[in-house]
Length: 80
Image (cartoon, rainbow, N blue to C red; front, side, top):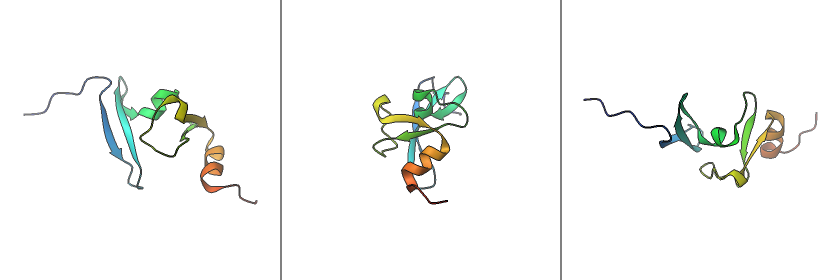
């Protein structure tokens, strides 16, 4: 017997395979990263967790960035 489908708004933990864990939330589009739903991140945008805790999706902990801005935060400014 197949388990019942999870209702919208259900959550589960996802291991990204890079040592990071994220919360997935069931939306009308299927399972999506909760931090992207909370910030309404657009395609091409990235979401940074200010405290670097990928399970803390409080709105004050999240900021939308360009990929370049996000790299600078995590890798530091590089000389070109």
